[in-house]
Image (tube, rainbow, N blue to C red):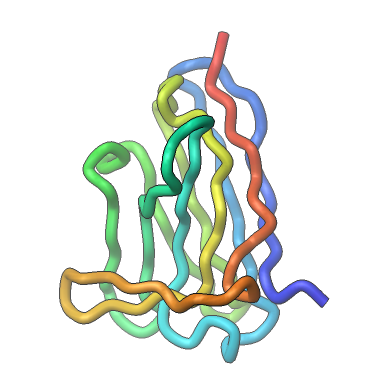
Length: 126
């Protein structure tokens, strides 16, 4: 049984919008925070956004600030990533991670395959 389920993604033109969803099968699989990484072809996987389950802590990578919004539904163990004004450079596979935590403005991730979603492709192109 998958511990993390992702949905959303697809092909949109520049300036378009998409919404990703990520659900942890149980809060024990995501005790503190969830978020997304992304990996473009030929590039390193990068951490882009996160949200805490228990307080107002959020993180946005500078390149997505003002365009991406992360939100949560605690009752459903689900987080959402609304992506607006998408650019070609946002094209990547987006991976949800359920084992994040923060100490102030510094964010950390737990190791283990069970914390990762299967990935969803986002393509921004005409």
